[in-house]
Length: 95
Image (cartoon, rainbow, N blue to C red):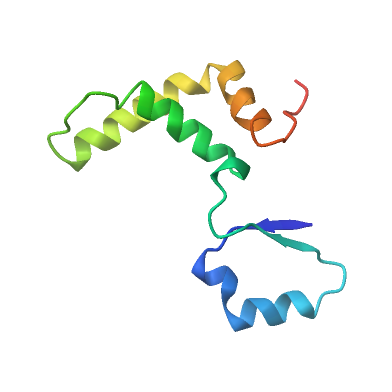
């Protein structure tokens, strides 16, 4: 089973042919815009409200540093990450 978004490489004729030639492969394609099905959107939402909120960035490097710092802090907050998964209907893996 494979779940795909609408990345342009997933929609090419070659990829469609590859999928149809494999009867064992089941592909579920997400709708064009489905943030509620993507746990990454929840993580970005947390970063927008915390690390990058009310802040002007001097340059792209400053933004990258802030996002990395925020992701590093989230890495240790398993309850927040589990909440992002649960919000999509996915179940976090047991420890």
